Image (cartoon, rainbow, N blue to C red; front, side):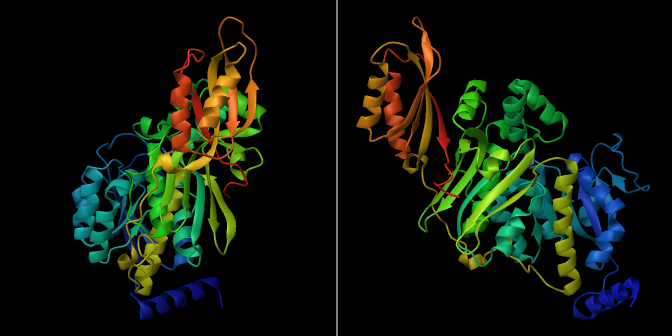
Length: 458
Ligand code: HSE
């Protein structure tokens, strides 16, 4: 049978089982970087997508307040409009793609779309991290599908992997590089000795950074993403506020250099572990051994290593930001919704991957309770007895030192004294550092970076 004939037969079968549809109409709200990418794919690959999913995806409207800027996309007259309500009120629009960002206008938009019975696709992690519980509930009540694959890890199918591929697994741990901007900056400093600001500017130029780049560099964007992932992994209500967050703005080239000498790289990691009672969920710069897969993930690339009780260790890797990778994830959500529509399925996969009645409130472990290994860099006066004073205090707080390294010599002033510890409790580390910092031999607040060794988790 010729390919076209098979395709037509499939379409007919779809029509018998579900709804026969020739086209699914899409409205994009927000014609920025991501919206442009979605339009480009819909226009350039629509035949290919149709062959795969059995229905044509038609880009009916794009709404944006800026009708002037040339985005390099050839749209027919009347497609670009400046009024989102036209899309919301059009009964022919089946799926709305929200690429506006932020959590005020976008929130109202999504709620209105649900009210109007439109399926939704969004990349808006900030919105879902804050209001996801309410939005998902409203959508469930109206039997509306919400696709949000692009909200975490750009093109990496991490949400599909957790909700569907790993459906048979207890998820034990996740370690992720989830912010392209931070990874780009850290890579530029490590490999090209770029200044922080210059690297951030480049990330902004490349369209990786958030509208407010402090969301990137202070770890908030990563925490938004982690909040979403732990909800799906463990079946818990989205809880962003209890996630411990520390960004990369305090990381110095000196720490990156010392880490390298010890055989480590510094990455901004989203870390979660679940022991069945409480979830460890934290975002902070982390030293990982160069032998760890994640240490080789550079530039705007993202990666996530997941440990499940059946699957063991697995990882996903891909561009976490930027126009086309993010748009690719949005298209995958559109295709999933379109396939459900033509087969007649409604919310085949629940928003958080668990049936609503099984979504619980699971506590997030306070950072003070976390046990891990530490890198501590002191600016200490270079004279006899300094090391024993520091190590004495660490010992009093049950902290065992794994290695010590002093960089350079300086009879007059301070030198960097670096210690790596075995696993210790965060509250003990913080109490010890407070005591050590008060010593007259210490010049500044110490730098503390948590370590994830290969044998520690994944
Ligand atoms: N600002 C985000 C990043 C965009 O840099 O990864 C993708 O969520």
